Length: 467
Image (tube, rainbow, N blue to C red; front, side):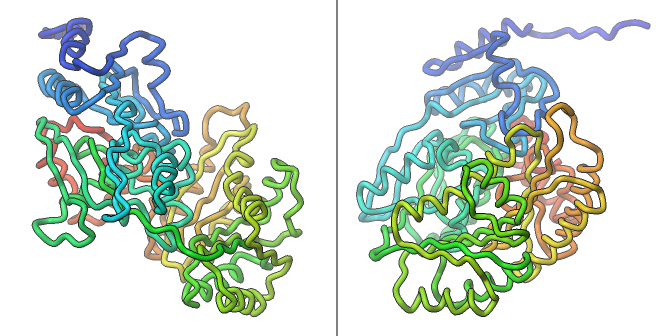
C-alpha cells in the first residue's frame, strides 16, 4: 500500500519559529514537558485527542492577534485558556493545536464605586476582583466554587454560576461589556459600563457563555454590588428527605427574605464531609440545607424559623457570629474535596425548574440504586441546579460504562422535565453531542450558522459548545 504523501509548506519547527516572531511580548512553549503539562485540564476528563503544537502565554492584544494570524495561515486550531479549571474539558488540547493562554493578562484596570463597575483583564482571579471591590465598599457577586482559582475571562466564557446565583444571578448577569478579538483578528468593543443598554443586537451576551468558540475575550466590564448594611445570617437545618427540603426551599424563595445561598446536601455527602473535616453534623439519613441571608432582621429570622418549623426541620442552627458562619459555609465548600479524596469521580451539572428539583433528585437516587452506583447528590437548591457526583475506585482508570448509562438516563430525564443538562459548568467536549437533543433542529442549525459567520475557518476551540 502506498503511503499518502503530504507536501507541507512549513514543518512544525518552522511554524513554531514564525509563532515566536508573531508573539513579541508573550512566550511560546513547544518543549515536551510544557506540552504534557498543558495537554489536559487538571479538573477535566482528559479528553485531548493528541498533543498540541505549542502552548502560548500571551501578554496583550498584539500577541493574540499574532497567534490568530499564524493559525489562519496554517489552518491551526486555537484552544483559548485562562486558568484551566474547566470540569468539562473546555480547554483540553486538540491534536496539532495552539493553546492560547491569557492568564498573564491579569490586571485589574479599574474599580469604580461611583459607577459600580470594575474593568479587568481576562486573567484576573475572581477572588482577587472581589477583594479589590470590598476595599471600596463593594463586592463582586458571582461566586463559582472555583472562586479562589478561576479567572473572570473563563467565568465569562462559560457563564459560571455559583452559590449566590439564587440572589445575584450567574456571570452573565454581572457582565456589562467586553472586548473580544475575532478569529480574523478584529477587536470588538461590546456593551459598556451602563446598566441599561438597548442599542444594536446584544452581542455582549452572545459571547458570554460561548466557551471561546466565537472569539477571544481580552477585557471584561462587570457590575459591582454595594456591601449590604446590617448583620448577615447563616444557618443549617436537616429534613427527613430531599423532597421535603425542596418544598421548604420553595417557601423560603417566595417569602421575601431574599436568601443569597440555599444549598442542599444528601446524607451521604454530609457524612463524607464530617469524615473529611472531623466534624459531627450528619443526622442519620437526613438531608442538610445550608442557607445565608446577606442581612437578617427579626422579621426575616422569624419567617425562616416558621418555614423550617412547618416542614419539621430539626437540628436547626442559626448564627451571625463570623467564625461560626464560616464553619457552616466551609461544610459546603469542602464537599468536593471530601468526595474526591482517594477515588475517581465525575460531577454533573443539570438544572430544572425548581418545582421539578425533587423529582430529578429522587430519579438520580433511583438510577444509582438500579445500576449499583456510588452517587453523592447535592445542589444549589434555590435555583434548581443539581450536582450528582459519581465515583469509582482509583485503581480503575476508565469510567465504568454503567456510569455512562446512568448519565444518559439522567440527561434524558432532565430534558423531559424542561431542564438543561448544563446549568453552570458549560458544555466543553463532555456534552457537545447533546446540542441537538437539548436545543432542537432549528436552533441547533442556527448555532452552527452563528459559529460559521464569526469563525468561518472553524479554528476557535473546535469540538466545544456545539458538536
